[in-house]
Length: 85
Image (cartoon, one colour):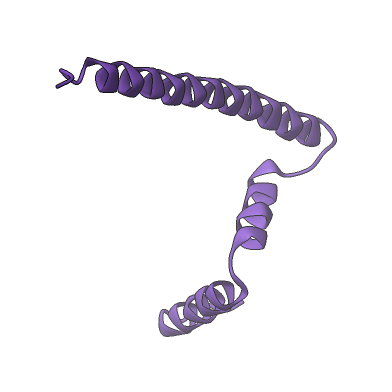
């Protein structure tokens, strides 16, 4: 009966493949982060408000229903504390 060492070798090889793939993706993510920061920097140099741009990107990524609910709650809260728009 086999001692299972072949299974361990295969599992170790598979694990190494996963680790290598994740490491490559993490490096890509790091590079993408640097690229995104560069674009924000360019936009800021062109006179755009980066803080507002980040909000626009966040809102655009939201599901329509979630965005509408958030906007509705914001309006309710502002009304409750007497803030005027």
